[in-house]
Image (cartoon, rainbow, N blue to C red):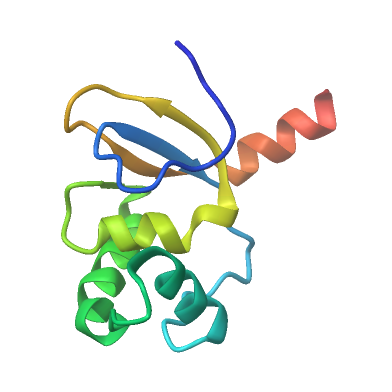
Length: 113
């Protein structure tokens, strides 16, 4: 399997592992989120049109540990979490997802490694 660090926008056939800080909050009104949204969708885009779908996708990610990239709002969520991607890989046609990294497992590897 070929893996790489980084982010590929709008790819439903890629999966992403994200590592979110303990204090992470998705603030859809923040300047950083608006800038990322504008960079991806252009200044004519309106994040308010997508905010409910993005929030639902984020809540599913946090509750279940993963969210399918074909879920409404997940494409924009991919863009907003780009700084937190620690791995990405091709996962076949229309089979992508966003997965939360297991923090305890990473911390254990750091302690033992």
